[in-house]
Length: 145
Image 1: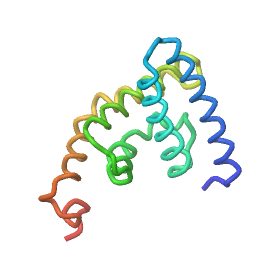
Image 2 (image 1 turned 60 degrees about the horizontal axis):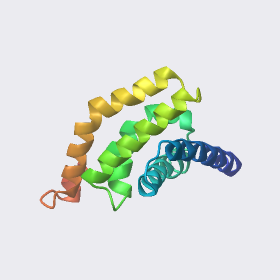
Image 3 (image 1 turned 90 degrees about the vertical axis):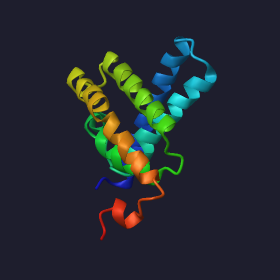
Image 4 (image 1 turned 120 degrees about the horizontal axis):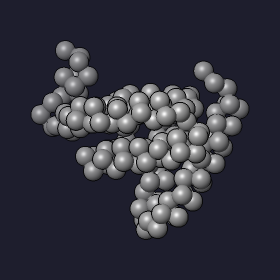
């Protein structure tokens, strides 16, 4: 477990990365609404999940997608939806591609992330739909019988 000081330091580093990414998005002539959505999505992943929940850095994020999308996002975010899942995966992939282009993560890390998104998206979507299914009890969903 990381100390409170390490978590705060990491969160400040994440904010620097978010600001770099925001500037990049602004230079791409995206609408303010689209930019804000991407920044919000990445903030959720970097700060709420990676830093505060998993105590991991941005570099660790490439290998943390499955636990984020399949478990944390579905169970912790009341606003989790199919549209949200699609938006989040798009934002995460775009952000990490930018980070790779800036040499802040490795190409191998980005390739792993892109692989997870491509190969696991349907599974994450099924898990989300299953979680939202009113015909499945919490006990059944969580495997408690």
